[in-house]
Image 1 (cartoon, rainbow, N blue to C red):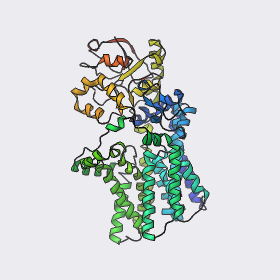
Image 2: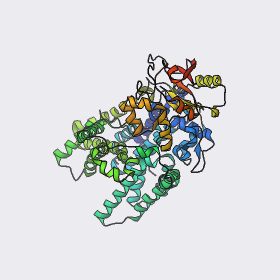
Image 3: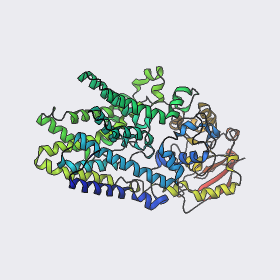
Image 4: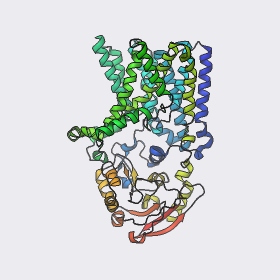
Length: 559
């Protein structure tokens, strides 16, 4: 696959892997006391894996349902494919061990993939070993979206294999990479956009070189087919399931032209939280100065790859921002799939682009010589140091730990107090994410999922219709997206985490309790007191507190 004759590079590789091991160590050492991402992680995916593992529907039919959530209206397909290894990690191991293993797998593969890509195709010189490895290490330490797995961080390894095949290499290792990556990545969270970009790459080659390069074309088709097999549930739902779902009311084209321009610059400079690159302080200045050198020294031919990636990076930010531009309205009204599929995610290519740009920028500095060359090691190491501060334990230190968030001991007390089998009653949550109740085995009428029946959304809406009428922001959020099928209230707005030290109370709550009861609803878990509970035909049963929980739970029963 590759050889490393340079002993210095061998030592640097070992050191980098040790650093990477230390980076993920808090997850293993602290376990459930670790601080990890809440948004699109604790509030959703980790609970989903737990629910799926306990549902008996892990390998269920394409029309199977998950009985624990929204009265069994949630399709098994909404929880992804059982052919993804991440699902089995959570089925076989306790949640935090599975999470730590997944983080480790993803970061090690990301490091090796970027290292192989840079060493073979972009920065091959032995003298460039230090910054090549430092760039790879920094890339592997980015705070990626955990359930995305290798959807973005696996792109360098895939590109390495594709470039090998494009250049005429026939090694079986390349196809092994293209076969295994789909087992730990998602096509909609990264690889659809990567593979379509590879298709454009092949087409440009065909036009420029008049060479069909069939092995390269076949390799793109091959990986696409593997993804289609792995993601068979997704493709089945897209092609054959015509039941209207919550995704059908997703509306994205709402920004003015100037708002889109501003978002372009914001994304270019700061990035996006789902594909965080943390490039602002070191990488961005390096690439801008490197581009200045290219202009000054007229290095357009020598550095054509750098120049292409420089403009591509800007174009991807513009594409992301202008996907939300109002100008799309005529097209989205005519072609519905432009609303239901998030084409803005072409910007998920940016982590790959930005870190290759960084490596090429450092190479330009090196070749310039003098003080520029001397600065290269310091700049490369500076980005690694920056990434250390974006370790989850530091980044989310003010959020609840895993144990505090899911509060298993506290919710076990709630379950015991209610005293009935959990499948015999239905609950909703106020001021906390419904994922907490779901993780603890409760059957919930509320959920966080962007793929559930539209009929259920309308039914649930009756419970909160008076609250939505009071507040345009939550009304728009629910009606024009609805992924969070929550008990929204005017007084709380889009806030879902009121900790036990909160002084907030609900004074003017107006719920349709009859609609709640018609859906089987019996109890409300609220993290704050409801002052006018009686007006809503609710009775406070008990208040639950725990030193190991971030919440104070007020248990209300519908009368």
